[in-house]
Image (cartoon, rainbow, N blue to C red):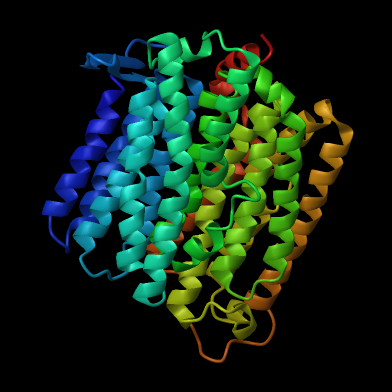
Length: 477
């Protein structure tokens, strides 16, 4: 299957959604995003067959091509994006939005841009898709976010400037690599003959862009405020999908291109990642706002992902990919639970909530299962990723594994503490509705994914193993 079809479907869905009108926008977006997911599954089932790459000349001087390539790692990320996209849209289907056609078309365009990032094998094309993804989320936060318009604009501008500034360093590195290789192709970057000094500069130019996007401590300062101000659909896109662009890019574009610098600065980066994991856990404990709570919980989890990638071991990298997928589904489920609570009670402060389980047993079960996966209970998807990352870190240094392992305890503590305050105790002051059929469907799909791949992770491992092996080969050359 020609992989460009997935991009065409998402881009066509962007325009058709907008012109379908406000009443039909969400339904049209679900239709096109589901179609993209179906084609992504076909791509996975035919992995290794013809049609997993696409290239046409785009610009002659400099030499730029519209080049796409779908190896196991890229397919895993495309599957995550295209499967979560209709789930996220369905999760907001029952909500009433002003100018819904614009909102859902922006969501579709964001899905298109992120899919382009994961499939691009030309560095300039990759950069174009990377930057395009900023545009829709900026307007989603400003136009449909929470709080006053001035505060929404400030949060959106902070996010935009942070990520754009980091991307400029990456752009500089890409241009420099072109002057060295005469090509923007990924393979040319991998085989470039760079000195140690050149590798160090390029490593940190890429690192700034990715550390802000993931985010890695101390480049996280934009995150909590942006997650709090964004609407639920925007927060789910940010936490579930957009942060994964950075983690994927570390493995695809940074580590194999700068193997010496990656080895040289591994210890420093790992310390930052571990600090971020523990810091996120401690900050989550201090939050009273549910969205900020989940933002710091997400910071802790993506710190785990980054640590796995920068461990530079096969197990660490494989665990990072597994946790990317697990965290993508899990954090969407948790932020959706927060949206359900806000929709029912008009409250987000943990101190003002309690006893919701008395009126909503179905929601309680869904929230509890999502939370168990988040804290990495055995037989859940997160557990597989976290355990594999810890094993990869153990191969580097026992102390790294021990320190990051403390976050598992902290994670369980702050999530259970939050659940007790919000869901248990005396019945809430006013009865609330339990989950609707649509909401049950969203939670059921996500929970089934988290439990199924927690028990049987082999399909994921088989899909990405060859790509991870290639990355490790370039790192150790």
